Length: 156
Image (tube, rainbow, N blue to C red; front, side, top):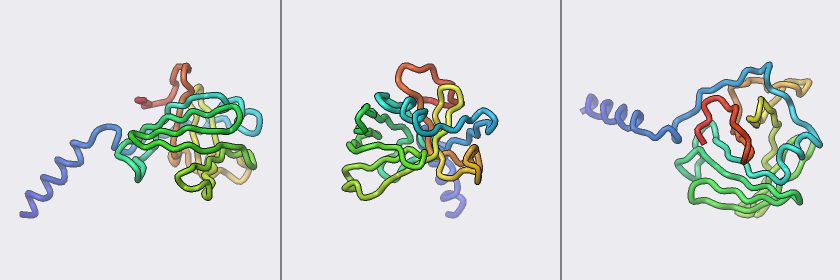
């Protein structure tokens, strides 16, 4: 019985679509440029971003998302069938997001880095703030609509 459960479990894991698997890509820390203030605004304001999470979110079985960010700080987020509107802003040189489905009570703030056209977000940075503590621990990466993707293993 255990043998069959092990085989069934292995079959299930190998049958998961690529979008449900964890990305093992680690960007080269030397290529990551920290974005701050006006650089953040220039990279995000008025853009539609096509992104991928490192691991699937709890809302859906996908790792892909699209986020339209207006110049005036509004955002329209889509992940699979899920959709939420909200706001974005820059605080302490971090990108912050608040969404309507959470009644805008929770701020999600991230340190942003660019490598080529690929934008990576991280929760933690080195004490000087210039590099992620662990380059492998990015939360999501995205490319602006119309940009040629330089993201490694990006399949969006």
